[in-house]
Image (cartoon, rainbow, N blue to C red; front, side):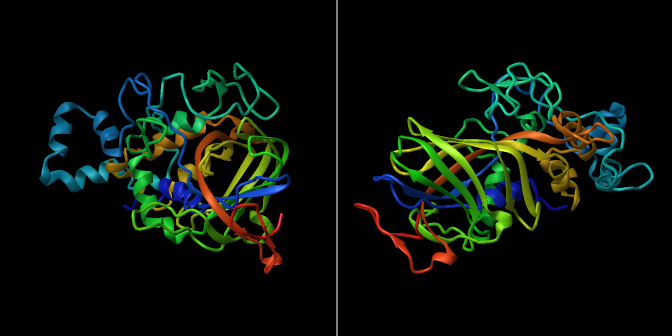
Length: 375
């Protein structure tokens, strides 16, 4: 069973963007960036997982049988029988193909804190036109947060972090393997009057043709030039504003090509960005939005790797946790919510962005390198 999934998502999105371009000193300037990291936005709080981490398929099965049977199955000579019972239904079907097999939802966070954004606009999680009633988290700033995806995966051991700056170990491993194989995701902020305060900017998120590269120390290089893919499917444009160095955007639909080994395309509804422009020219903040929940199950179930004990995921339990936690966009026929609120940590470095239709054009910037591609 292979582990090519949940981190491919992180990579698919993370390994897609990696650089920033020009500093904004004069009105109407454009800043370019490449995303270097985009993991799930997780948190670690003492009260999050009082009953322990989510159980693997083996642990789930052992909990369902008597002590004597547990001891017998865990003997080396009974390993094959143990795995057959843990990974397959009594009639021999792989759990990957029967996610609705009766099983309790996996353990999920019980804490009140999470990173993310207030997607539905409510303070108490009451139902809206697009979302159902649900319990809100509280962000570090005390504001209400919608991040039901964290409610599902927050107790998966390999996806837990200790601080906001940590990357979960499983995500980190896949990132390092796939990073330089994936095209970058690019962010451009145009019509900047002042990098600290500009009330009317345009934010464009596109896919590059080139992957990012790392220096000899293993860090993603800044100030590289990327060519923006003109395919309109990966061209996302939204209005935004910068106040006190923090960029926020209006709601928008965000579509981006992902990792072909996991989720081929990402489609966020009601997405929005909140990013801090740091003095060194980098970006750091959050992407929030609703995403279809089933692809998060598919990442584990499509190739059967999710039931492996090392990933602490029991597929039926994971399926029901996602389904039960989904909080938006109900199916008009069944009433089942099709989307789940989520938050992603974004880190991006300065980059130059070239546009194929503008090859040869250059926009000079005072005191800075020439930016390839005009405003």
